[in-house]
Length: 188
Image (cartoon, rainbow, N blue to C red; front, side, top):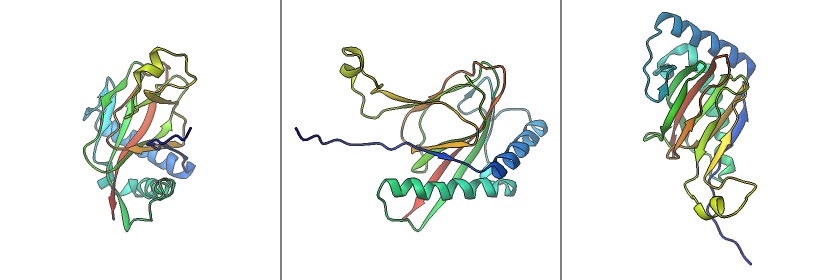
């Protein structure tokens, strides 16, 4: 039997400890200066938008864009003229906080880079655009065909198609999960 299928690639990548440390310190400063959340998708935690406009996060944007070129190569896409980090925002999720289910309407690629990710601090759940109810309810598969569950790990990032519905489970640890989410615009 010949099998034909669509595929959706989720890219998991390792970051840079120097960028991680400086970004973490800058986010804590932002939180201390303005503890009021912007709160778009963050529930019971702190979210700050607009980091992509702040010069102290340029090394982080550069890291994300460079890793994104690697991700696009896995899609067998010729190197585009450019990539631009059009949104960059911080999340601090204490115990009990999460990010509600959502998708993005700008950029082609979205993702997250975990700066601090204690054990049980909330998995990233990315829903499949190709759901198959039968394979998950009538059989005992070794895989979930409706979603990918990605465990957060400090200094690790994830890329995915911006239109994929996703959420972050509740932080069940006693420590904060600190991350930076982003959107990438491709210039062909």
